[in-house]
Length: 144
Image (cartoon, rainbow, N blue to C red; front, side):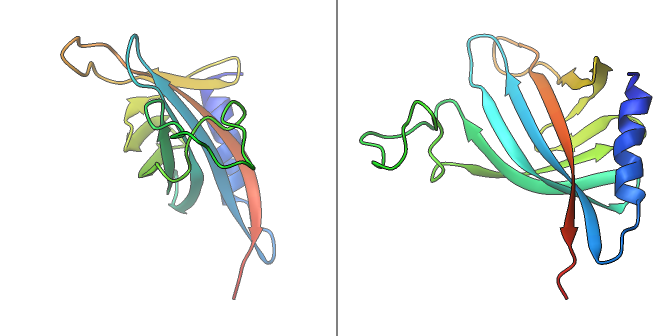
């Protein structure tokens, strides 16, 4: 699927009207670069300013893992990130161009249904950060 087709699918979802529901996109964003921190982020996007879908979520970092002992009810191998050590993020995706902005910024490319991209070099080693973005359509009831 071409990138324009993938993005159009999400734009069409956001523009659709269904009585009593609001259409959103849930996102998962994974970032990483050679020999450094990796991030896992998730959240929700709304399209109040079409074709821009924007929203917020939380970022978990590879250096923010459980401090032992972890709570008994959670296995740190199955749930590696400490939910008490997370950072709020913002994210917006232009569903026409694929430009991603906010806490992470890159121009999304599409290949085999995957949205990905590289941000500008960062840090003293000047590595490019790779981002992989997954979007999931969602419909939620409007609460009056």
